[in-house]
Image (cartoon, rainbow, N blue to C red; front, side, top):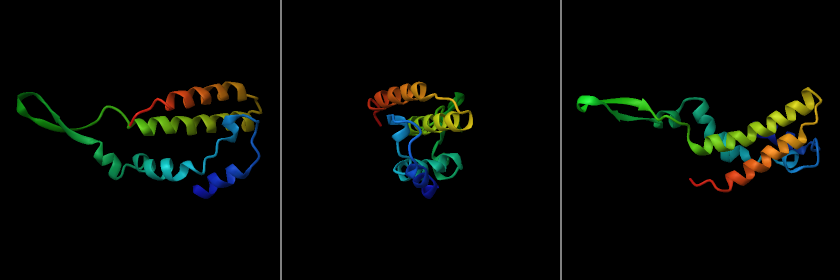
Length: 115
């Protein structure tokens, strides 16, 4: 997967904007490699299970009601890049203004993120 991201990064950008110039290969270790475990239900997914107190002093194992914030945040930007490139290549539509706007909004909001 990392080599595929590096190959994608070596291509000329579809349009000259920040979104088109965003590189995916640097995200590989930080996002895909770490968070792929969530998608594949291994150790990280097991850690999402925790004891939930019930009535009458009983406890049941349950899942937390949300995905971890970093997973949601960084998956969103990777999805934005993928959707932009798909609309450009597959449908031959110039959606650069719409997706650039989403990307800039993500950049602004993600700067406020606290772990």
